[in-house]
Picture 1 (tube, rainbow, N blue to C red):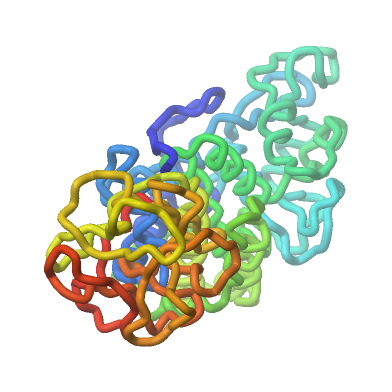
Picture 2 (cartoon, helix red, strand yellow):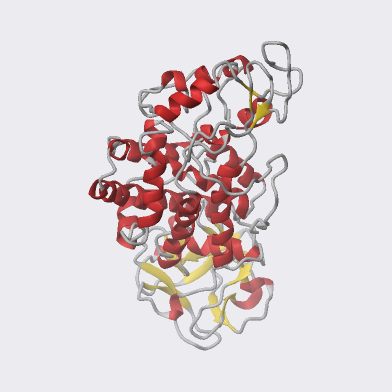
Length: 476
């Protein structure tokens, strides 16, 4: 059964009007998320698009609406009013600079959007830390100006926590007890780490992404999945070299302006970039290894766009980092699709040539019973459930029986029967590839309807793209 996708507001997170931010520009985040889903739609055989679309439909979305909602979620993260910094003297707490720091810093939430590849681990025990002004190896006037204004200012840790020099306190939001705690993700912290902005070790963005992904897995929503997709900031070199300056805002504006003109989302570029990532294990909910691989890509560009505004250099870098950002999003969506299906949905499997259903012939589940095509009737002997982790396809008539390639004949003409389910048995292990059902032992074969009349057999045949090898697998 697919978990229903619903658009909900997130308690405790207030959304503000769009403003400039320390990230790819917000519209670029949205484009990357939408382009990733469009790529999957164009490549259902090599991505989990079918499962993703089924989850979207189960939540009442078209795939286009689903992509738009996710893209908007990725857009919105820069507007979170969840990070307040409090004055060293006044104790007054604000979520954005009051001194017009320029386009690179709009709200303090952006300080959670870095992963510093110029250094190793941080004070929290993370393998790679986030923004920490005191430990920057690359910086500019904006970094210095903000740190000067915020010297001895502390992260809001709620009523009764840290205060200004004269004991004054005006807590607005417990940013340490909520935001930092959420982004801790197994690392360790103390509020004293955040008693002076200049030495505050902000948690890295991969922890932010992992937190929102855990929320998504617990209660799948398109909006929350969109929040995860803001981690494409890791493909922005300023976020892995870690600076709010050094042509930061200018580079991001350039990417927005030239995204289409330079064809940065070209299909072939995304295909090539996909190979740079290690696919996530569908049973492991920790997405940080994938995110860190993305960060390594932008860091490998050597900070080129930090040090020049030359158009040709920007084209060179953008043609690497944007396709990789989209590819990273595809890998995330593949993993999400795996985890949005619990594997207990029983659906009719009708072939798309004649519209006939896969039928456990005779209505009796027993070893060796035939499976044929028949006029669809909605009965339990025509309903099946796919268990992705094992590759087993269970009969609803008796879930202890599964589709089986009779006698292990995994070649052209091999017949499909049912047999007592045996996890790991090669005869019973299938993959859904696009809308085809293929033995895991040989993806060059697919389950094929051998005819167009009720009672005709089904079996294996070489993949040929015909509609008699296409089945209504949506929702499995």
